[in-house]
Image (cartoon, rainbow, N blue to C red; front, side, top):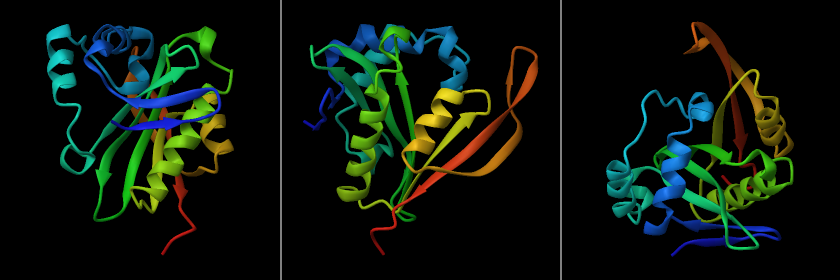
Length: 177
C-alpha cells in the first residue's frame, strides 16, 4: 500500500473505510465546480470504485490518494488523472474538505509530496492543473510550487447560468531528460 509521509500530513491509498468520506465529498454541491461534477454519486457506485481503487496507475490512468492529518483523520484528497505514460504527464487536483483545515499548509505539503512522487517514482516529465480564474487559493497554491500559467481557456465551464474562464498551469520537471 502506498503511503507518502510529510511533516504534518501523509498521503495514503484509498481504503473501503473511506466510503462515507468520499461520498460526502462527491455529493457536496459547493465543490462540484472544482471537479466538474453535475450529478450526485450513490454509495453503491463509490463502493464499486473503492473495490477497484487498488488497480495500478498504468492500468486505470489515475491515482487518488487520501490526505490524512497527524491524528490519522482523512481531511482531503489529491489525484493524478489523465496519466499519460507515452508523453510522461498527468493532471493533478487537490481538495481539502473542511474550510477549518484550509490555509494551514496541508494542501501545500500534500502537493509537494505528490509532485516529488510523480517526478521521482513515476518518471513524469510534467504535471498540469486546470483552475477556475476566480479560485485564488488554488492558483496561489500551485504557483507557489512552481506551476506556471500557460493559458486561459475562455468560457470553459458553464456554471449557474454563466461561463467561467479556467487557467491551465504546468510544472515541467527540469531535473530529467
